[in-house]
Length: 216
Image (cartoon, rainbow, N blue to C red; front, side):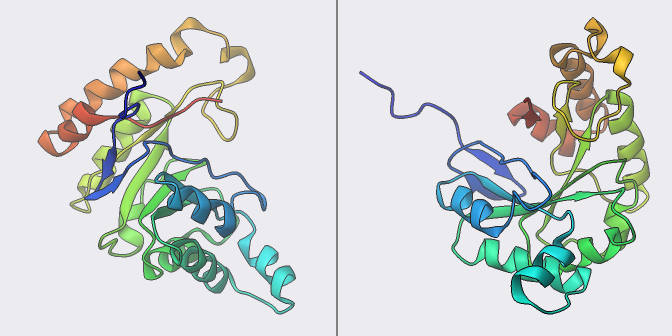
């Protein structure tokens, strides 16, 4: 007889997903509102990729979109059909990081996942309100740097995505480091979890529940 509860629910900043699956932010033009809203309707976290949204929407609608307008539009479309959705924003995005964050929060995205560099000033860009801020890290040291910086803004991560060297994308590993035992995901996870404990009960509560991990 099959169990009715295969996977536990997942809660981030008061928002509960029935299915604890976070869809990756695949750019350019893969993770857009149709995919994100479909995942959200099924009970997971649907994620829009912010990469080149201004150009993608300009082509889609046949008129010029600013970064702010494009992000606001796509996040709003992802949220329109219900469920929980978010956006993946790269720190290294050319010239549009702050506008992307502002637009996502103004459109009331549920979650901002940010990597492609360390999002050290993310909480300072705009009051996040009900939006969860989730940095992507590849080491305990990276999490430590983020937590120390965010403490200046009276903010701590609502969750963290841990990426190992096999995740693909924008990671903190050189080619000759990819296959080292010290960089295996199962080796990286314990010190990251200890980092949660070190930074107090707020982070500890998340450590006890989960640390989302992207493994490709």
